[in-house]
Image (cartoon, rainbow, N blue to C red; front, side, top):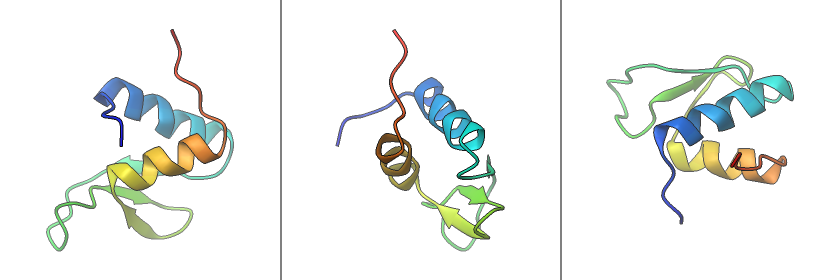
Length: 64
């Protein structure tokens, strides 16, 4: 999988929020350090890879 910068991940999170797909925030997760993003809409913890996958599947495009 392609590596994405923090700026690109933030853009993906905004995309998912604007599309009303997710309402997520970066939070510390002591139980699973790989899952650092919490989505309040689905009440679930997500990994960077899950965010990337969801954003791309829903039409996120990298701004130039």
